[in-house]
Length: 353
Image 1 (cartoon, rainbow, N blue to C red):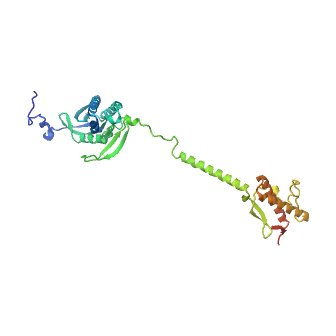
Image 2: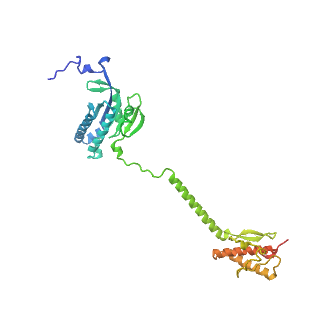
Image 3: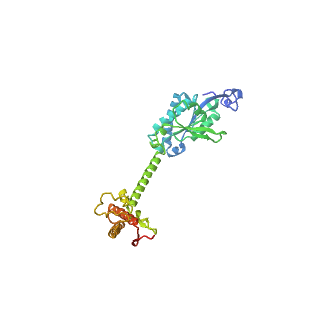
């Protein structure tokens, strides 16, 4: 039978309580605390107690083996909670990532609703030693960080992050300064990327630089608008509505009024005086008559040809090229007759002085 010392005997459990020990006998140390518990443990036990307990025991064995492999020590357990200490923050975080990776492999054998997944929190802080147990604010912060972690995830404090950020090839995400229950000061909190996070497909990104697609679209639309404008302008030039007819005003001079427009060569716009030595015109073109020398028969022929050309020009039902030639011929004849003092007002007559 084991001999037990009275509570008031030095060395007894009661005598070792921190609140009963003199301040000179308190032992403190700076360590890294790892706190872990099972997410949704109550639901898992309510659904299937035996399976949940069996899985928890198997996971706990894996947990303990990895803690020892990383030079750590489990100093307390309570229900589904596990507390471990490490002398090195680097080893503590390495152990946590190894634990989550190993347990994830075991959990893959079960449906998601039946997986026993741990949440882990890690803090670097000063604690008090009581026999094999550790007490103090450093342990409490680790427990609060564990509560903030996602199932299968890891949360670390800013004090741990400052020690490992240049020593481990892990991804970290800052959660900012988080206020936890019964912790007086906000705690800088970070999550650690695990293998489960790295298995997520990377977001699809465009190989083109931002803005290039928008600029290309604007350029294409600009070209489309310019091409449409050019086509519309060309069609307008060829249509009867976009052309002009020269008619004399009250002074007897020819004025531009709406009618067909056709590019007129220099030979078409030349005055009779300038073209007296030019080659003979085609058969359908009336003879050129110099100013002041036109006979009545020449004037009648010019007026008749102008009327014919005007009818073809304004009809618009024929070929565009043929219509353009008729309009050009009409304009030329109007200029010739105007040069000889003839104006068109319902009919050809002498221009008023």
